[in-house]
Length: 294
Length: 276
Image 1 (cartoon, helix red, strand yellow):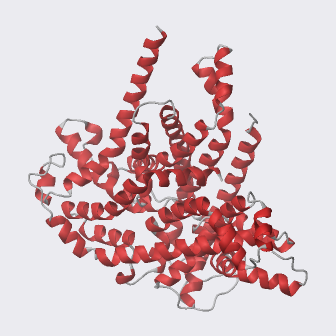
Image 2 (cartoon, chains in turn yellow, green):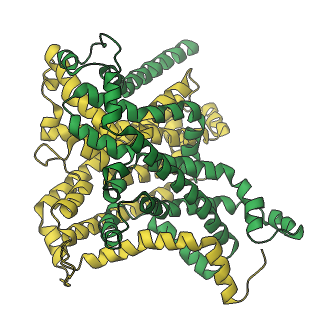
Image 3 (cartoon, rainbow over the protein chains, first blue to last red):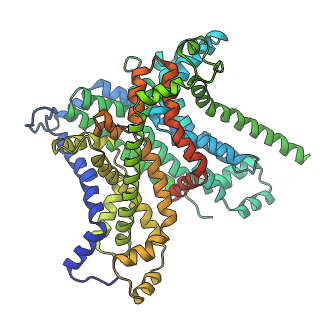
């Protein structure tokens, strides 16, 4: 490519190659993002066209909203459990499925399957399982824990969300961990073997340090997905029973599109953004610090 | 002695995986079994096999959920969005890598940084802006938005890949008389095939299954994508268990068929996508 020296030539080249993308990107992401920040300082209700600046009133109302805080706490709890369980299970799957056992491709393909299907459909599938199949099993085989639907009980309904999310995401993370395991240098493991390290020591002192990049990615992805979950929440529990399982995405959605509280809803969405950004940056920072060279 | 110990651990491993595998597959199996049954049969025993193979549920579900429309809409939206994301983002990444202008570095930084913004932080103003200019309720508006949401990750991945392509190739082609766009489409783009495949697979999985964005943008029933029509169908016929199960199976089938054919590429795509 010849070197453009004049500004107008540079601009032409840029517009030809990157113009469309830049325009779409700014109108779909950046503009709504900035407009969203502006909205949080207005009294916009979705109907009247005039809206007044109200300062930090929406943020004050957002934090006075006890249901919002409850939903936020529930989401934090949900994120904690799903991140831990998803990663532990995915890690174990990947560990076993890279040890050269028969049929490993079959298992890999099976565990990955839920990732091909939308959260809405996965949620409906499990709704049937929890409210019909397990209740039938509970009543006919005398297993009291299943004899009433888990979806009708606030605490158990929360756990159905965790179970379904772990089931949905662990196959995806497994694939990433498998890549990590395959990148652990064989000579390093052999050297540890010769030095008399047992399986546990090899895991803690060799494999896990070499796996930090994979762990970083999986933690990042599970955190993001956890905070943003909506589809499964909607299809499986619809936030119920009695609004007890409304995670933050659903809460913000209802606040804006059902209660027409756009200003407050957007303020709460912006708080969500700040929390997700902060948690992700901290997590990536610490994971990067732990990375080692082979 | 050593050998025996090894075989015991491998049996334990196999059992562990086997039990989990069964648990992972059971939901699908029961949905499939019950999709052939009538409501009465399901209430009687949701675990029993169907007394006869009966496709009535499937036919009814196919018509009631307007499957043809849903499928066609999903297909059009996914194909156009993914093609445009791949073509436009690769050109963008190319110019961002090859021209080290300050402006380019700034744009790249903004794109990468924007990846941390959760969709929920944009959805309310997005609907407000595009609603006020009358751009909602059209699949082309939805495709436009998918390009916007897909660009940053695609540019980021192409960027990493193009950096590793030696400049000498393009210089040699330039001596042979290729210039401008020719250079990109004849020399660089063919080399991008592996990463373009990865991006396409990740984006197909995302767009085909996406629910929240289309539910906000597409309002008219005949515009609905497959996840949307499944959602409304299931909402209406939840109590008619056999019928709703058949609806779910109908939505799952195309994905499973594609998966059986392209399994290797899909898993590999996810793998490559995570490393970049």
